[in-house]
Length: 137
Length: 137
DNA sequence: CAACTTGGTTCCTGTTGGAAACCGAAGGAG
DNA sequence: CTCCTTCGGTTTCCAACAGGAACCAAGTTG
Image 1 (cartoon, rainbow over the protein chains, first blue to last red):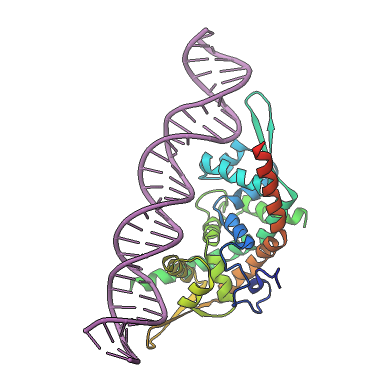
Image 2 (image 1 turned 90 degrees about the vertical axis):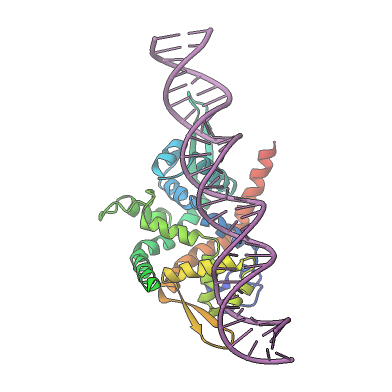
């Protein structure tokens, strides 16, 4: 199972040993996990999944992004082939970002996680409260 | 799953009960996104999904975690009700971490994403190469 | 009593993220 | 002609955070 980089998750069978490699730092799956794990990528991807947008529209719609992080994240998403960047030589330059088929695939894969988050956030919040209460004793 | 790609998003945008807007900074879903997004949580969760483990076993199996980050991440996972921490008063103290039902649920939700990562990492890597080549021109 | 084990915590340093200032092209105001 | 504005960034500066290494506590062995 050379390919079975993440057997633990897919089929809770084995791994534990070592060549499951997600647990080794330079595994490609782990690199992608890091990318997805980044604070803004998922937000941007989901906005673009809804339709293409310009830089300033993204900045407006995502609460709390700095321009630096937005352009930085967009550039790495573009590099990863998940979004496209199109510059129109209009009056003040216009840049349109859109999701690629690859990005849309990822977004679909992420949707499970996001659905879970929505459904279970209350359980998590309650667990936190319980933990904090117990902690103070 | 073309259009159904991210029905969740529409869901986000128009949540009835109080504007659970993911694109607004203090949305609970976003908090959870941040947690999942953290570098070690997914790795730890998947190891524990395979079976309970002790602190040092986790440290050994995950390449590149510092003890500090491991204990820190474990504590927040515990706080979120995703793992349990059990101390046995043995000779040198033994601490066993295990996944909770809630954590297992999240793990299942994450598996889609990880499967995607495995299947498509090559496409991403190739996109990166193309981008970098174009960039240098 | 020194050494070793497990499961951490503390200290120091290097990287990172955010806020805000600046940039550059072009059109408009004065 | 100069100033001001908009768009899409980049640069600068600083605070927060992650990682490595050393340290710690408790008990057991030698």
